[in-house]
Image (cartoon, rainbow, N blue to C red; front, side):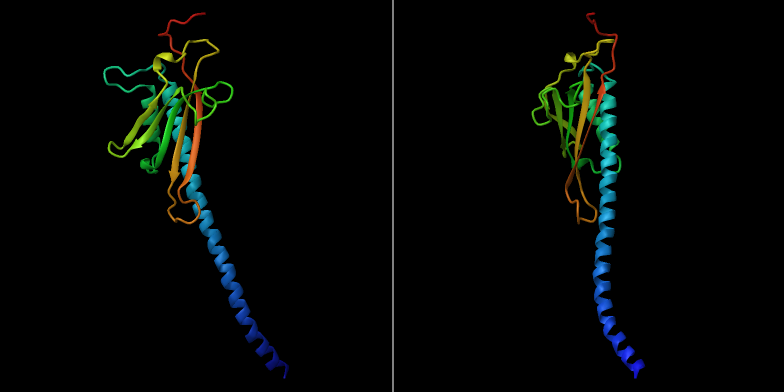
Length: 195
């Protein structure tokens, strides 16, 4: 009978459908986790980018501010602003924060790369004080060119490296998120500038 033949064929197809459904479901679950993980990584990237801009804005607006009577200098103010700006992230995951004198043409450190930066102040996370502390200081506030109208006025950059901790732990576990921002140092009339 044709009806019985159709019924027995349909019964055999249901096993193949179950296997195909298992494969497709697994693929869809992996795709879903990938979208969620990518969203968390993108959120961290936005926060780190915003923190680099905030740090550069703070440092550029404080030209030639040096440590006087215990007050922090321009680089420490920048690093503190980076720490304040990474709301929602784990500050202990900050790998490094560099405040550097940037080249006006490339936006990179004057030495040409972040690895060989000499005119910069490098910070690392100190777990004891729960703050960024300088590990190398090669840029004195007194050497900043903040003369009004000077086309060779210095640029200040902030480089932030953050270790992304994946909440799900599948795809981007311990990925580094690196961002840098460069801004012109605000001119100050407190300087005696040569024309």
